[in-house]
Length: 116
Image (cartoon, rainbow, N blue to C red; front, side, top):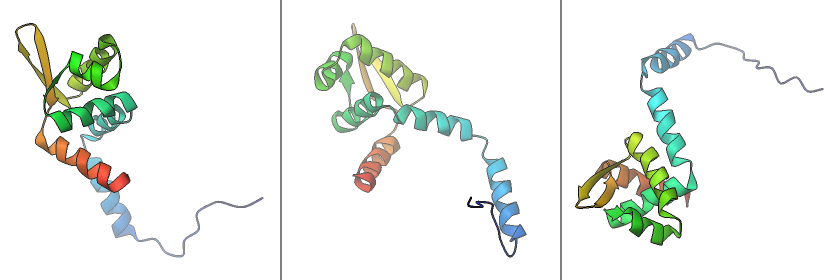
C-alpha cells in the first residue's frame, strides 16, 4: 500500500498564513461559485455565447439558434437573470435579453481562446 500522506521538510508559515487570510477575506466566494455553476451548464453557456455574439436576442431567436423549445430557453434564462449574468428589457410583448456586462462578453471570449 502506498502512503499518500503529505511530507514536507519545512513549513513556510508566512505563506500559509497569508493564503488563509486571503481566503477569509473573500466574502463573495459563494456568489462566484454559483456563477461558475451557471456557466457549467452547456445550454446556459450556449445562451451566453449567443448573446455575446449577437448582443441582444429574444427567446424565440434563441430557441431557433439552439433548436430548443422556448419554454426550455426561458427556464435557463431565468436562472441566468437571477444569477446576474443577463439582463432583459421589454419592447411591447417581446422581451430581449443581453449580457449583464461587457466584461462578461470579454471573459467569455478569453475563456474560449484559452480553452479551445
